[in-house]
Image 1 (cartoon, rainbow, N blue to C red):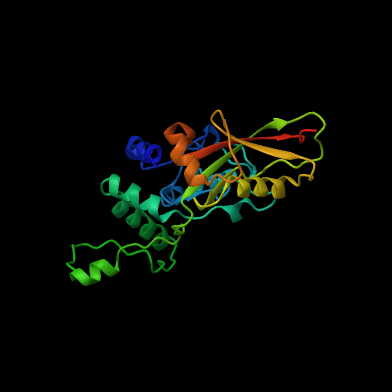
Image 2 (image 1 turned 120 degrees about the horizontal axis):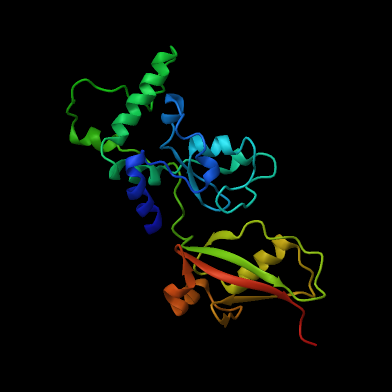
Amino acid sequence: MDGTVDRVVEEGSTRGFFRTDASLSGGDESRDTDHSQRTHEQHPDDECLHTFCKSCIVKHFFYSNRCPNCSIVVHQTQPMYSIRPDRQLQDIVFKMVPYLEEDERSRIYAFYKRRGLDVPKPVASPATYPVKLPQRQKKDMLPQSVFTIPSELDVSLMLEFVGAEEGIENYKPLERKYVRVSGEATVRHVELFIRRKMELSQNCKVDVVCGDHLLEQCQSLREVCNTMGKNALQDGMLVLHFGLVLPAQ
């Protein structure tokens, strides 16, 4: 999250626009009000959790089904199914960039009025004079997140495939290398997940490594985090490397 907040601070003067790839910024100078009224709707990709503005990622998906940052396939046929609004990140942007939320509401209001359309209920028309609301009503009007990560899923994994031993063939690539799981899950659970996703045969063994340490199947992921410390983390995710080997004869 620290890296995300830093990007918000750096890009606040450019209207909070998240770009992680040059392909998303080609038409930047010529964007119109239709584009501007959506630039702050942060939408992470469920596959890899990279975040983009809604308008840019929608345009990108017109000609590609891959994440513009890491090139992972988002969805084979319908990449739009794998994006969702991130209200919590949007709240951070609004709080860190002064007057951004009010300006955005005014743009949305003008967008609908100019086309003779009804303004959607969640979008309030800009008030000419500030209206004082009771404290209870103010509390009820606070924006609520539409997506909450269960508290038990407290460990984020990045699974990196390092290769297979000679003689191991006919396995599928691991398409989803970003996984969020419970800290009580063990290395054995990670191995089973890899086996199922890669459709591995029984005569193939999965070695899971964190740093320079070969992990035991009985170790919990929380134990691995506590043992390895921050050196095993990348962007807040526990990095596990795994390889496919043949069992010892």
